[in-house]
Figure 1 (cartoon, rainbow, N blue to C red):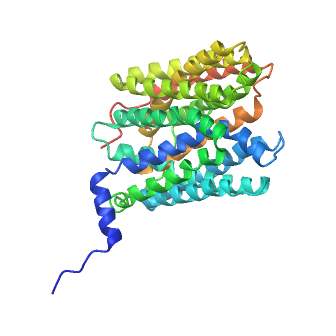
Figure 2 (figure 1 turned 135 degrees about the vertical axis):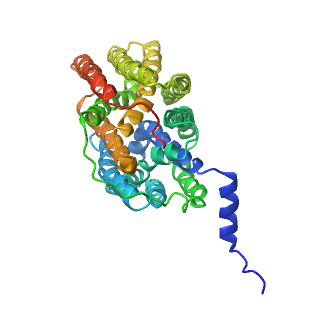
Figure 3 (figure 1 turned 180 degrees about the vertical axis):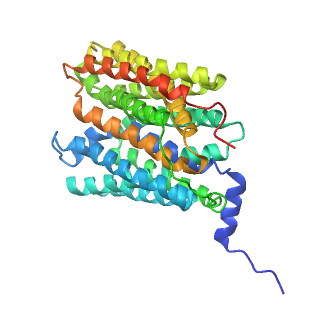
Length: 392
């Protein structure tokens, strides 16, 4: 008897599996996730104009996304630990893509809200799996994998604000938005061949957070509130400072993400616990100075320096927090821990953007208090960690 012929789809997946390693799908999916964060700050004015939203309605498009993402993150982390990290990652990518395509065909405010909720749920399901998949299959240790993750994601996001602004200005914001859901589907297709390899989970045990883990989560809430506020305030502060071109605003965000990517890459040279603690110390200081510059921005030079310092601060906070937080939990509970990490970041961003306006008189005080609290948490976060890599 002749051997049974393989289905064409299985042949294609097998070839893709040989070409693209298991980390490629998560890296691409995370890149799209970061690009969406970077581009949506510029997309809001276009969406507001296109769908005739009021000034009070537009911010809800960010807030509902953050809230739905934060709620589904916990579910994604829980299911990733107990069922299959690969399956949950794949489902999340599909839902995220559907929500992204839905925004292009929305008919009004309510429709936009529903599609943003769907997008947030999808992002919440797949994003906790990214650091787990990367560190689980890393060859040179977790810190090295996480710095590469930050550098690649930042580089992908670096030019998206500028490209989004150019396409929106000269073509349509819908054309600029289309690659976000499209590349989400591509990440799903490239990951399918590795689905069985990533479906094996270990027996999960009860996770009891310790002081170091709690300090890390609180640090992430505050610091990522600062960096999210910087990203979303730059376009508005630019208008106040006399920068009328959206392309120039896009260049500022491009600078922020280029600096973020470059600093993440440079951090690969020193990933010991002492170096990571120093990064966590410097991060909130850089962010605090950036917020001060935005509070008193008089021209483009202030904005450019704020974008540079904001990118530095975000990079210094990014990898060390994830690394230390994952070191505080058992190996089999790391998807749930990663979900709590991202929940803290998104809730911190939603709180900062929703509560502190870019022209608030209390902005400098809020920046100083936030930085001071972060610095106070560094010691508790770092000293309770054991040395070594996440990967067994």
